[in-house]
Length: 424
Image (cartoon, rainbow, N blue to C red; front, top):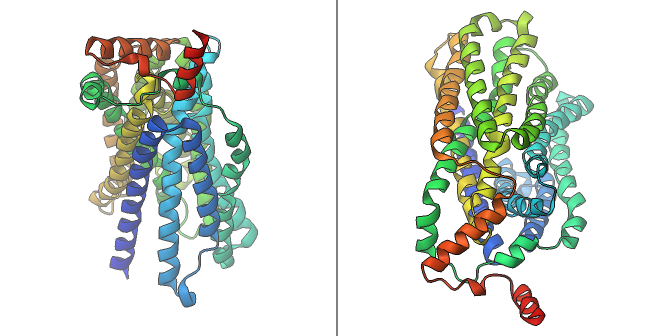
């Protein structure tokens, strides 16, 4: 039975990775080749339909195997929809910030992207807590269906707005119809590699800490603690992402995304090493509040740094014609990091044996070391990002294409070129 559960967990993690990778890459290509607006609309519709189907999933003849097969299929398609939100939504938000006042652009991009993601993580832990409290632990069959059904509400609330959404002006002006792949690779391979490494490391820690927050609390909470209390503790820890993301949004404008990322991730590493050293004192039920606060600060600093800024770098250090694909590739590596982290963290805990102190120390030690590594990579590999970076990057890429014989007069959507020709 344990082997069956392990195989099921492994299959679920692998399925999550594949669905996100396909979603990021496919919708990234689609958003550049076809339309930002329509790509977002498709991903929204996918989320609505398959969230509802997930909640109502039923195995043939009432079989449990059939139920899990249906859930796996629907969950895969939900993952595709979520994966589509990243490249299309984030790059559209970045391009729209060009219409905002300089000095405020980074914060609005972050508040529209990472801050909303963090808010979703908190709500996704809080809602099951309330549902389990309402249904009781004797009715978990109803609880999980209710939780999945509630997942259809956010995309439903966005459907009308996305139907009315217009393409960003920057996209209309710079859409590419023929892609010189080799020229693009030579121009952007270094930036994409640096951003992908940082995103990989960030998700390695962030997703794993979010997932295993409840698991660590088992070391501190009584073994007979009710399920809702585990959800509640996870909600408390995840809530620290919110102030971290909010503070980072303003710091990205005040000191710049590069230094905001470096400062956040360095401080995160320092706090993590401090927690590693003090874990023997924290590993006690009477100090659970201190454990939550320090873990929350560790996670909040991750949002101040790479959590807020890595998507901003992926959006603004690439030009409009290939921004969706660039972002999709970097985000896909981030998901690989999350996948690797969820495998490595249990191995780290198992390597500690029965020593509960080391079970908590090892993940913090590894993650803190990677934080320092990320700061070094960012310092060496990332340029500064100014308020007008999108326009500047488009101009830089346009000059590069012209120097290599590409006809930039054909950039832009068909409608934009017709309007430009008519105006002349």
